[in-house]
Image 1: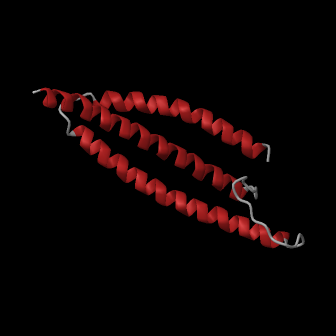
Image 2: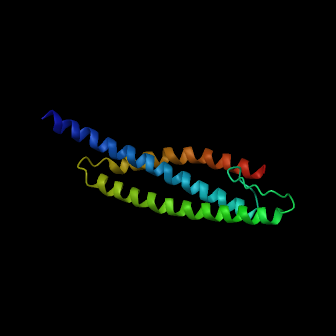
Image 3: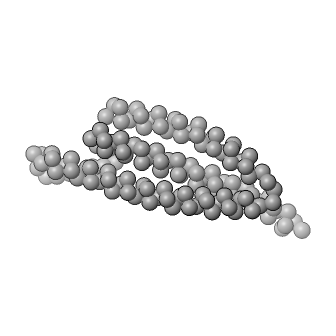
Length: 132
């Protein structure tokens, strides 16, 4: 009997935490896509891209390599976003099948919390590309 009660308490919490973690990863991926697109449009070189070419006069080659690298990063991030969306969909289906019925309230609360977290992240990204 104790195992059944423990399962009924732990399983929704596990699903809720997995949802929260996956949703946060998805939101961070969206922010990274946005940042990379801004860098590509404004011809900025993000700090995580360091391409070294032996001669200093090949600046055009360096710029093309940076643009290519940003494009590859955006492609990777879109694939990651698609994978995370599938995971979120599966977690929502699992949670909707649970008998307690508190899932809708948990989603609303989690989304509000994560949106507040991501507002700060977007402000930081805005500062980063404005000062570059």
